[in-house]
Length: 109
Image (cartoon, rainbow, N blue to C red):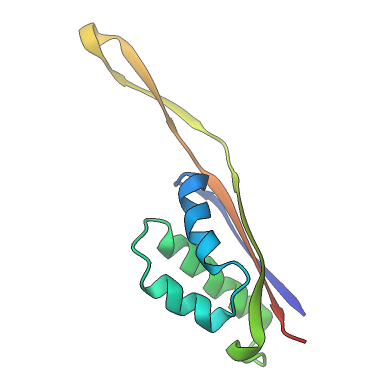
């Protein structure tokens, strides 16, 4: 059985989230929670919250020891284009990046 959780329009770059996902990809859920607990990255709370949601979607009758992360990936979302004041009041553009995170957990056979 598979369970999916999405975190869409997260206000963080997809590259930053991908660094954290590389640490937990293919691991068991218990091991992923232990790795995330000691990961000092800004994307950790987002990944942890989405993983918790995926485990909850799997149901109450499935023990954590039987679940593993089947697929974890992040895709870039829409970019918010903004400006701040530069020299002589000229606009200086910058981008606020977003991402979509997907976590799929499944039973071990």
